[in-house]
Image 1: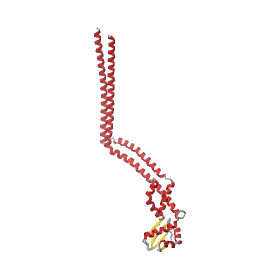
Image 2: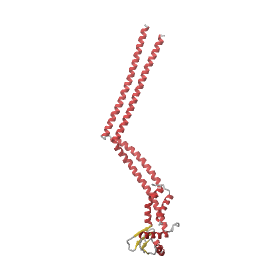
Image 3: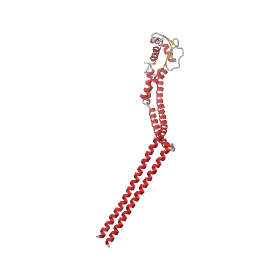
Image 4: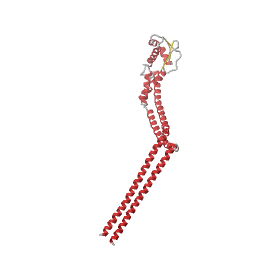
Length: 110
Length: 207
């Protein structure tokens, strides 16, 4: 009787393990399926975008981004030049006088 | 004793079962993470490929917008430089006028006036001249005609009756009127300004 019980318990435990293994395989299979789908969708999308780029359709989307970037850069450039122009105009009066004197000397015959 | 064995076996099996599930979940997470990584790579590679295809258009957009800003910027720099150089020239003109009116004590203008005539003579190499100047300078030259003649080593000099509308300096013409040298202060200032513009800009650090 006792032996029968042990055998019965062993069988149940074996089934439990088998079930767990199956459940685990299910989890992995589900993940793999999801992963394959993710990659497939990405590849599909990439392919579509490439074709659109090749046929120059949807180019506006890229150009818009590039334009935005370029506008930001242009603002930086404008600011930099404006600062340099201000620095140039800020020459002190005494240096203007010095430079003018250089001209005056050149005007007079030696 | 047997019960104890049973419970240990059950415990071990349950533990094993749980471990199966934990391992499976971890493996599933790794699979998903790898897929996500691959998706990113595909997107990056696609963006690079697209950039390669429409690169010239993108560069054209960049060059048009940034290029225009650079052009405008350089124009502003040039205007700023010209503003400073114009200020130098205006100041120099002011000083030259003061000098011609004898308002500057550090410069003897009458000496320079004679030198301007000598310079014209050296350039023209004629025997006879007609000299024109502004009213003030003509009066000075009339009063000092001997000095002028001496400076020109006895060459014949005739002074114009009509004053010239100039700041200072002289307009020297040969006897038959075929050669003229305008050795006026304004013309010399223009010439000097042209010659020294780069040097002045460098000195002022505006280049």
